[in-house]
Image (cartoon, rainbow, N blue to C red; front, side, top):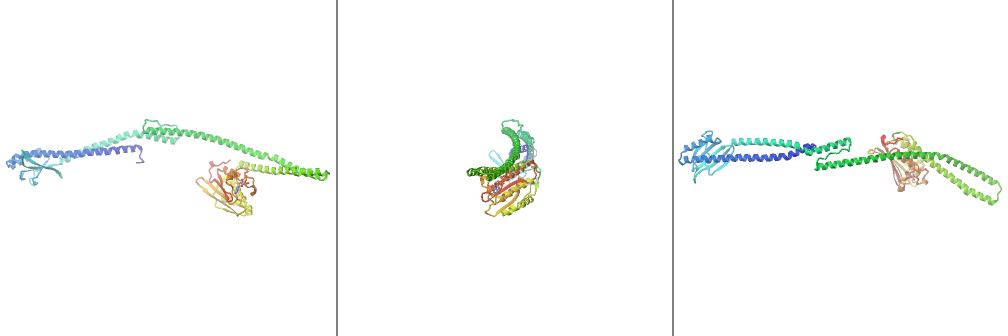
Length: 505
Ligand code: ADP
């Protein structure tokens, strides 16, 4: 029933309501008709019995049996439905026998004691007292055939069933016609819905025909379409704005990269000059000191000149020297980052088990020196730039060795799994090193951000480069760490080629 069309459902429902009423109504009429027919036959036979009984009074009074027989015989023409009849005098003696078929061999039933009428098998048995002016003359017993009754009943049933079938057919035709009142607006709505889902055209509206529940449904549907249309427009606007902003960000990014590149590159020549002049100054100072040794000056002035050279000039030169070194480090760091942006790279499937073995062996010296135990589990492959992915994991392994806790044996574990739902290979570099306090965990991915400069050499760029490479692969990097316990760096990279998701620039 659930899968039937609404049209057929409505027809079936109308018929379910109509057919039982028709059948029950007609059954009632048929039963009443049969009852009427039977009642009519009883009445007729009763009347006939009383009439014939009257005619028999005089022959019974004169004990004229033949007269009774003659009276009964007249029934052959006037009452053809009477099969048999018997007349008894008041003593119960048989006075007359009648049989329509003319068989004389029939045995009369015992004389009735009272009037009755009852149907027995295929016949109706009626007994009536022959009574006239307060005197009983005996009984008449008639057996009427029910053939006619059966025939009439059959005819009546047939015609009523015919009418009933006609009415059911008529109900079906009416149901077929009137189900449209409900089904058509719903089917029209279904058609419009299907069209909308196929063509994604939300500008269409359904035309309301009335204010019934279907009219309310139409209103709701139109309102819904209006909202979808509005949301669609808003979404398109937001999307256009997003694209515009993205382009702007991209433009600014390129500009910034350009600025970083130019400044880090161009600032090197003045820096080299400063370094050169600083050396020149150191050299001149040495020369000056040599001259001071040989010339003759009063002790007080000589001491003052030595103090100025030691405290002011040498300190300033030391400061200039350390600042130029720091500046050089910063510039080379910036240049390194900016080169990464400009680097052309080809993306391919990378066997991470091979790459990780290579990375670990390249750190063999540091691993031995720090007495760190490394363990590499089976790793899933990923899709990326061999060069960049190598740099990414080298930086992480380098940090894991560098920030090991000197108070306990170092342990580094590298594992990975395939996140098929997001089509990503997820790797974890876990160490039991010094860990990172919670408040610094997000900032360590920033440029030049260093937490423990005393723990090891570094330029504060390792994780910034990791972040950049991960971004270029549309991946993700995050850290879980506890100060004094160790850190886990997670890297998610594409597990398979999906050119749409990659920034191949
Ligand atoms: P660098 O190592 O040159 O300082 P990074 O960008 O690689 O720069 O790291 C930034 C900071 O994050 C580090 O100074 C260090 O404090 C912290 N860090 C990175 N990796 C780890 C690690 N595995 N364990 C503890 N601290 C770490």
